[in-house]
Image (cartoon, rainbow, N blue to C red; front, top):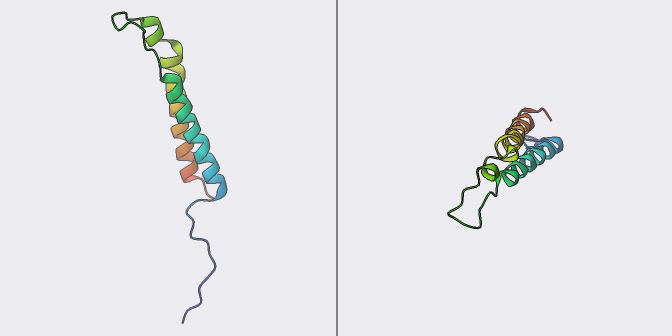
Length: 78
């Protein structure tokens, strides 16, 4: 019989999971920032609310940053 080494079979270390949670949080925050823009009257279109700086600039930057952090977390050596 061969002896079994006590090596961990985990793919990622603790720091990888922490970075993954940070990336997921950035993606979720970006989605929340992008949401909204609903008008009380469906016949009224408020372009300033729908195409605000927060929705078309800040939210996508947060989401892309979240994906970059996720890629870093996956490829980071533990």
